[in-house]
Length: 232
Length: 315
Image (cartoon, rainbow over all chains, first blue to last red; front, side, top):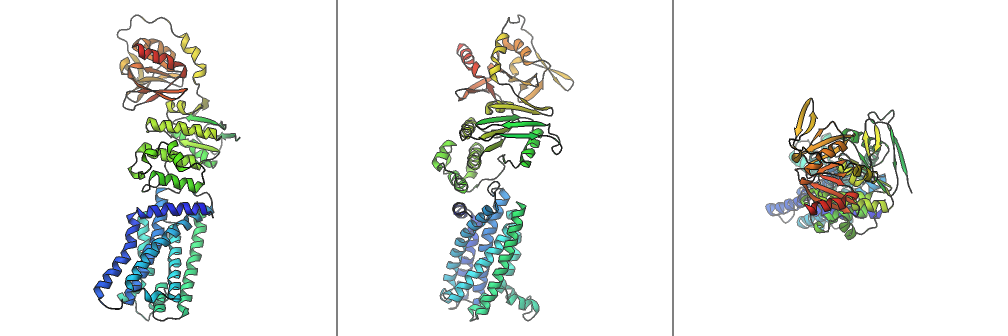
């Protein structure tokens, strides 16, 4: 790893992000939805399921989506040809892009939470949960990004992914899976659902389940990275 | 420091004749061949893990010229500063412009800068000056000069003989029969002086015959742009089309002298009526720009520059 190369890619992608509507619009969407919900419901308390749908969707679309579209654009336009000469330089690119993704996520998350009501999130458990969610979605985004060859394929990949992992609370609301069936109970274990449970006064077990998800995502990312390096 | 000697041809490399190519540091070599041969040679270079700059890789279109160069410079840890690089590649005028608004020639200069920043010991270009303006060719020559000073070796692959003669210190022609050096002007001075004898008296009704398939086409001398030597035979270029003749350049030169044709290079005869511009690349590299659709540039020997300037000031 080289700090010089990481900061080169970070600076480049930050400038590029600010000029790319394809990446800027997803950052705004959770904020717009949060504002809309806030106005429509007119309750003192923001509905929790809706809040976690926004947060989960935000992580899926902004965190996984940003790094995925950034990498697939590089692959599609062959801009990385000649830049990657070793596994270290591929890692530098991923790290640099993850930092830009981190900034995009932070902006979108903080503004959305301010609208939803920030007080409930300002404790160690919730901050840890949000951090785990970020790492989880980032690692899955990287895994997909390493093999996405075009920006068009990105959308196709991101849609089912964000429905399943990001908008998990919505699946329950849709009443398409019986709550006490196997699928229903499995869905309860998904990271965003665990964060929701933690919010409702859940125990450290929820955090442990989320950490397990993140560890699994790390294993997948590691395998994908090794495979991508062989292809290069 | 590093001499590279590569042997091509043999078992795996079907289609390539067997030859060995020696690349010395501080020297630019040009290989002129047709597109098929060039593709085979590029494959051969890839097999030897030598990167070839073919300008097909992407640049960051939304970012400005300056941001692109700053990124490549930082990524590769290159020591020359960004402003210096911008000036070296004549990009100071469009530094603030996003790449998608830049012209082909400006983009090509950004590509040169990327290649210059990225490369080390041996640098190979494929068709670097195809379809670009004179300024960009000048920038490319300047960059080749810098690469030679490093010192490093450069190899340029071209399918255009004029460019091969302009860009290479040593120019080769690659054919199915093998790799041959193309003679340059040093040896040529004696040859052309010998030919200046009497002028044919009956110049009326004179046509230049050329063969196309089995037809014989007759050209009026004023419509000819220039004539180049291909495999020892003269080839007439009219409106970008090439027609082979059955005689040598020296034979045709004698006949055409009267019509305002001039032997400007060992391998070229130019129609002086069609010369639009004399381009000076450096103290000892010149080209003539022809006033045709393609705006062809053809090489002008340094021994001929004095002579041709006199001719134009007389006329």
